[in-house]
Length: 482
Picture 1: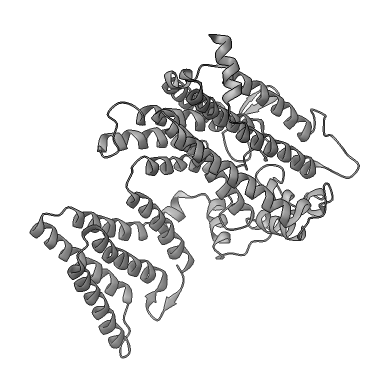
Picture 2 (picture 1 turned 180 degrees about the vertical axis):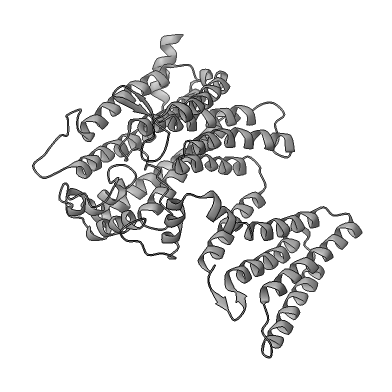
């Protein structure tokens, strides 16, 4: 029976995904060679050089793949909670025992080996969430279940934050996509999108005044009012109430504008007044018709206003100075080419200098002369852009897109809820890493320091992503073995 299972496992494994994995790992190794190469100094196979070191981790990954695929598929669901508990305990231990490296306490040093437990906590958390959500009677409509799921996500996230690793901590938010696939209301995602939008607008226009009106506050408050009116229609499909609120909003705005022609008017207070009156009207409708949806809209409006006026406190009091500067540089509020903006500026130069076809393997001048810090880890994509050009960079993105779509497709084919949920967790983590890393090196998102899967140098990240992927592929083979 055992030999049959082992044989059928390799016969039924998704070889297309494995091929994509091998392509990315190989391309990643050559990119590390290019990023680490110095004039007339070649250490591609020497353990003292990063290419040689990464090659050792690649070989260890292959051994790990064999072990993962040989274990029974039920092993991962049976011990899912144990993996999670052990990973959280390891994260807690890391907070106190890890030495400070580049400003964080996230690496456990074991002789010549350094491991980052946060990379392994991702697959453990994905397993735990899949275990809970696939349990009998679980529904996301129950508040207790939602709180439990969020606790599973936030606990390792908090531990990583205490290690002062903002980038790795934010990755755990990727599991929100899994909750959405499993039935969580889309309004949670809408709330998240609104929070990011409000933050960016309030920061971008924080110092811009139009007469006596702070422009950033006015834009956000106006958006809150407009979105609230739209939600009234979406949730209740009542055009009468939408017309009343729309007419009231337009009328008050027009009157305030006419008054401003004669005396200065702070439109922020006008917008706040509109939100208060609109909320009062929704309270009246909720009591009159016994509709709780109106209360949700009021909650959205009130929390949005509170969030708007907490942005300054969070930004100035909770973020580190270097994090503040990175956000300001990304939003164009500061120009710091020699400091916080240095990495991104050099990365853009490297990618842009590659042109259409690139300068060729080992011919990247930005890479050779080490202008880009962390060019073989977090900023590895700039090496691809410089040496392989637009064509090579596009090819990498296309391969990642095919890879993620393939994972989603396999997840949808699963016969068990556990395998499906875990598969979506895997796809979500890879998507989040790709989105943030590429956005980071191109200046679209702040520099928060997360690796590009299978490309960035690092044993912990390579092993972590390999475990994450091949546990899912092992679960997928069970679908075909039965």
